[in-house]
Length: 287
Image (tube, rainbow, N blue to C red; front, side, top):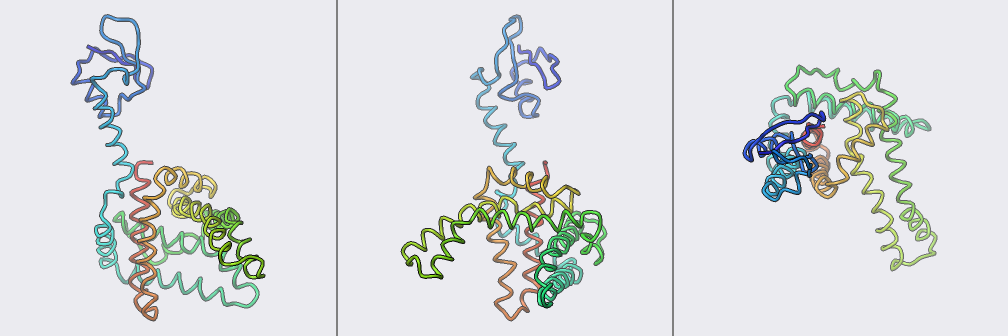
């Protein structure tokens, strides 16, 4: 028989092996839990008991599967779920996606102020679009006005999120920037440019993927942009390659429509956004 000290610092027991195994799978006990045998006074870590080593390992894998559920979601399944969501709300989702894109794209052509204004509005526009997709995905009543929900209390946080994260990611790739400048001026040859540029891009790409979910976090959870960047980084950092490969597929789906004179983008852009939102939900559903 066994006694344990729970998370509330209270003793629980006596429990036989089977009951203690249930506590492990219920997350009431883990490898760091203090355990003693009935009739003894000395406490040990649960990981010191060989009879529970396999259960602790299996429990750890189960928790990881819950946290990383989308890793086990086939790409086809992800695409299919997004397709079903889009087809069930095609006019709303496709219309909102096109409207947000055309507004942001058109503003960038305004002389002098177009580009900076477009950069400032990017976060609120696409943050609102993510919020719309999230409402639809969660089965809530959604209207076109929801796509512009970023123009509210979290406007500044949404505006700062892509600007700050993009600037920091760009600065982290300073070696790549230097390589481009030197190459343009003829200072370095192709032989030096390729490795310098490639190595310089690594930190920039890494941070871009780590902060990919900061924008939906701000609009969905009303977080400050720095807190959203920290949370996104923490959740993605330990499984960066998995997230990167999924996002590459999502972005390819979103932009493949532009190869067909923009017509296909009416379908592929909202389809890609839907996939991105589904991945976001899987990554943060237990957070």
